[in-house]
Image (cartoon, rainbow, N blue to C red; front, side, top):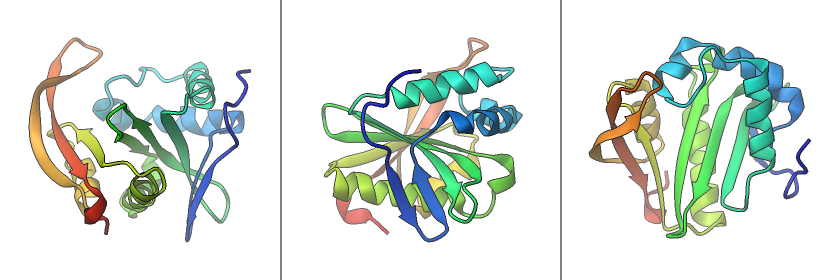
Length: 182
């Protein structure tokens, strides 16, 4: 087991908790990431997704440096895993956010809620100058999440994503600046 590099973190907002990952999350991660919709939109998710993949993911999250903040999205009432959201900070004090939502939690505003919570924490708590995220041009649901959270569509990045099968795909860039929080 890799030692955790900092104290466990939690961001709470109503019925949503963003918390640090634990190895107890491995079975729920493995189950969620077997959903073909997750692998369809996230090029680096292994197919098939195994318990070992989930354990390696948790280990990488626990070993993350001071420039990465990976969170489990969970329900406050029962700690049920709803998804994942991750913030990586670069030297320019820009945060890049990525996320996925478990099939049973989709369509309920969970990801928009999590993106708002993490966005506020990144811009106000970490004093980042910019947040950004990318989506596949065909991933309309992810684009709606970004827009509902206040992110602005900026550009199409040509041939930006490399998928497992060797295809290259464009991505759509969204950003959020400190004065744009909703």
